[in-house]
Structures are given as C-alpha cells and as structure tokens.
Image (cartoon, rainbow, N blue to C red; front, top):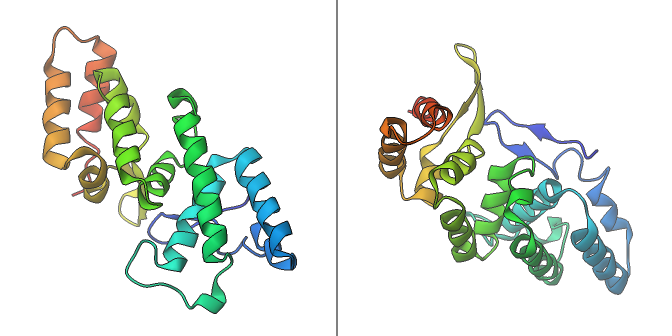
Length: 205
C-alpha cells in the first residue's frame, strides 16, 4: 500500500514525503530507455489509479502544465518527455475503464481533476455528463466528489466545494436546483430523495 498524507487543506500528497521512498526510486535509473520502459510498465499495469493520478497531478503542477508557477526544472522528478509518455497511457486507461470501476477508485475527485488538468478537460467533462444523465448516476458521482476538511469547531467534514461544482457541473446553483428537483419528486424512490436532500446539506459556504 502506497503511503499518502493530507495537508492542512485536506489535499492528498503523493510525491511529498513518500516520493523518495517509492516513486522517487525512478531517480536511481540512469538510462533514459530504461526509465521510459519502467514508467510505461508502471502506468500500464499499476493497480492503483489513485496513486498514478497523484503522480500525474503533482508532476503537471511541477512542470507548470497546470497552475500559476512551475518548479525549477532541475528539481523535476520526470522530464517533459516522460510526462508526455505517462499522460498518454494514463488517459488511455481512463477512457477504456468501465465507469463502475472508476467510481470505486479511492480519492475519486483527485482522479477527475487529474483527468481534467492533464490536457483532456473535454474528455473529463464528457464522462461526467454521461454518468450523471440519470438521477441515481448524478447522486452517485456527486457523493464521490466531496472534499475533506478539518476544523477545531466542526471536526472532519466532507463538503462540496464551489470550485469543484464550477469545474465539473456548471456551478453550485445548477447542482442545488437539480438536487431540489430530485428530493421533491414523488416518483423517485425514498432512498433517492433522501440522498438528494442529504447532499443539499453538504455545500461548502
């Protein structure tokens, strides 16, 4: 099991702390061909999509592919060419995976952000749109996209953050409107209406 930690904002960190213990061992390989084959095997056959997504996200931020500022190039764990290699393999795995399998991936929200930020925002949004076409599908995906936070007054909370709803669902207002319709629809099963009502209490203010 690959170790991970959460920082003060509740975000999972995959390469900080464990990078030299696990994935950071890539630095010990001098041959560029051997590094490429190692990365290809890892991203093609690695069991944990959650961990691979974490590597992708931290790498694209370090390279400045996403975010406001890149790290100095001499601190990069992977080269630009290696990042392109793992991006292609990672996206291929996502698009070929069964939706039910992706929904079971730990840190599902981080997986979706990795997909969106790695250069295929349209693909990620299309996937979300298809999976949320039905009310049960909408609830199933939304329940997986809550973010972790901790405070001295409320303790550990799992909330729907505005930035998540803006990125994947067109904003909080649209999500609230649909949840209200689901919760008030007498034709829905009681469990579906209850889940919608419960999610209406999970919006981060």
